[in-house]
Image (tube, rainbow, N blue to C red; front, side, top):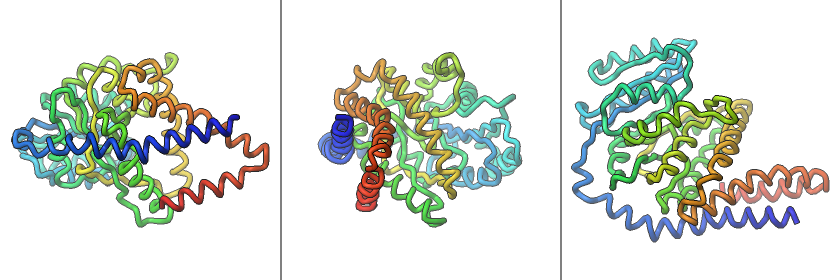
Length: 342
């Protein structure tokens, strides 16, 4: 009975992600994409501040800032603010060195104490006046047109956040980074299609996402004091923020034309550490969303519930397969499916 239920959940999630999502993206998304060529959108040039939260990034922050300075967006309407969360290495020195490339555009802040990514960004947002805030992680390199492509997608006042596409910068390092390259490709090319078509993308990556500053200020009390059972937590900030934006009634969209590149873990230890952190974040945030997801688009709600159910049930299936001696059969099946996708 359990195995049958899991198979049905897997089938539902698969159909939503690869079949229904793609169909909806063609039907609804085509109309949305046509609106992007509107001349009024091209003429809109809001003030933009790129916020780069940083912790122990070392010399890598210099390359990130260089890529942001190459944006084909009017320099007098674009600022860059780097927020150092009390790094213990030489990150702050490298950020200051990079700021010398364009002193009028770049500001480097240092938190009074380790505040976490979200609170550090909140601090920067409070001190700025720009219309849009673009979040860029400190290990990211952005394409020159990334900011412009994000700005073009704010086609109505109810769109509060626009995310970009993330690819792997070090994809040729080894077999692990090459596998993650495939994973990222499918993640953006297919897995978010249903949410994209409904304009309710539930997780926009901090690697490259633009927000209306007014919405970030509106949600600041919630973002500033995030706890689980009274315990403050700092992980999963991007997913939590996106969900709060959707909960507040705004739209969240994703464009594949705004591209950024991030550094993938090169070792299994680093990869599993990252995945465990993400899974913990997923579990906490999916649970938190149970109180309000039912009020969203029914297709997104069903997709959300089914993924959460699968997330909870999957460990039970693994345990059952171990106890019944079918573990390797299931593993070979999974490997075969993943190989075909690869």
